[in-house]
Image 1 (cartoon, helix red, strand yellow):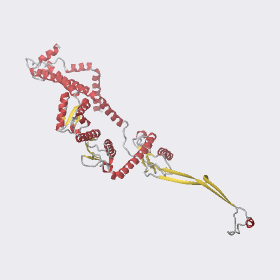
Image 2: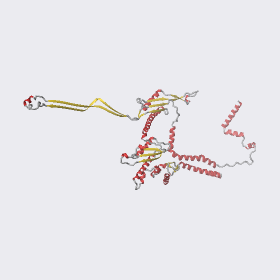
Image 3: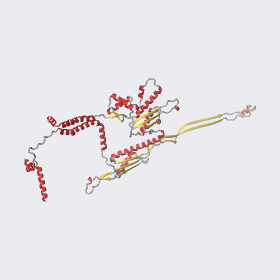
Image 4: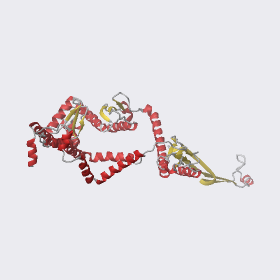
Length: 527
């Protein structure tokens, strides 16, 4: 400590000021770096705000003592990442920002004397605001506005006008909406409004482009859905075969392409068949009639006929009898009715093309070079039996059917593809995952070590040079410098020969090496 104080006192005034400044900067560097490392990360709380919403949100954040930043000309408010969700919930409970639309909280501030028309308009506003908030949760949507047309209810259903809705979306840059997402928005709005049909909902973007499809485009939408379904089936079959061949042949040793046209027609077959050999009596009707007719008086009407003698003479006939029998049998023939509805989406035919890479062997070296040291590879096709085995494996994987006329072709060709380092992708993903998990903790530590390194490798050498005491000035002898070399050599205490002998005694190995070198040079000159 005394030596350090003495060295400091030996410095000039300028050097002392420099040392003090450097030490002050060094002491201020570490806290400054740690503060920078611990600075909160600001994220967007709200963006694309109008001036009124910005002013109201800033006032509320000031009341809560929250730290915030303004960006993009005051249209964006940023807050620390650890408080963004908390502040959003608190501001949403206060109805901020108001430009996002008011929800059902509008009924929390109702008063007396509100007319039915006002209540109906408030309900429509609340419903529009709630739908806008729900749709705004999509990651691709930046802003959204919903307009509802809800006609008054009529007494007769024929006079009732349908409800309608329009949705205006402002999408984030580079994040378009897919067809299924647009249909999801349409069905969401239609399901949230009473009496609203999906075909009465129109979705447009901020460029005026219609995103939804009406009934006139249903055929085109169906065709697009069918194509997507077919492609999904083909990808599934390709993945089945690819994952299997990767285990057998290795990664990037095979390429699979599948074409699977699907049958989207809905076929309904009704069959009715009769079996004449199988008969069953359905009904039987039997009837029998018998009529008996007795003898009757015959003759000419008058007195003579009524005389007894004549009556006996003419009454010798027998009675008449008539019979009739009727029988009816109804048979039921065995009948079979079959109604078959074939499912849609069945595979019509499969066409599978498989390219398989061969094997590679080290080429034979030339001009005495060993084969193992050659970097060139020679392509060797796979045996025919192995190709046939691969064909059978692919058939089992895709469900091959000869009745459908499926075709499978496996061709062995050499591949020309760059070598991909194994584990490169996994290493990158691991580094990203590590930084996402521990980046917040490592940032202050990294800045601390950076400050220590600045102190050790920059400040410390400067401080040592400044604190190093200056040597005493060289004093010349009173008699002055020697005038000639002879006088200078006279002042020396040892002659050159004595110095050489002393050096040889101190370093015998080096002296011996020097003598050997001299001897070799002398022999070389003589030769």
